[in-house]
Length: 145
Image 1: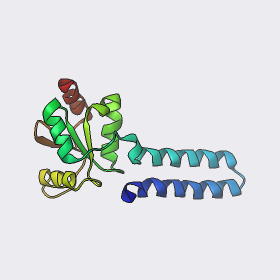
Image 2 (image 1 turned 180 degrees about the vertical axis):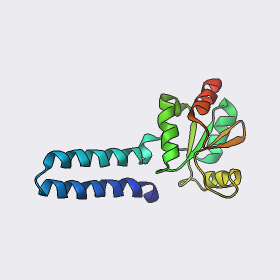
Image 3 (image 1 turned 135 degrees about the horizontal axis):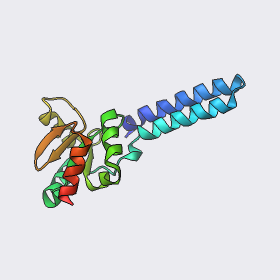
Image 4 (image 1 turned 60 degrees about the vertical axis):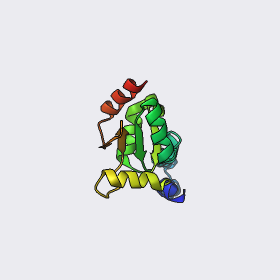
């Protein structure tokens, strides 16, 4: 769990340090703006914006039953964040697996990507797709609904 929060915590700490420096030099308005930007960046890079992760075996079992895609991701991944944001509310329909919390999920991703933990890896009907276009994933979600 700690590894998933390192980047967000570092972003908040950097924002606090910069804001403190700006506030002490007599620029409180800019300090507040800078702090808000860093807090926003921390939020976007935190596990909070992603739907609740489940284990890889559970995600694969559910996907086999309902036909929905399984999305393997990790916190701090810009491509995972892009996919999550572009899917919008539809993201909750997919089954999300955090590879930093699930060794079986990490193994599945490595098997699909020549030993690399390249995410997002989306599995649809048993076939892995590495960093697919969000529009394509949205289409797969609408087919399974």
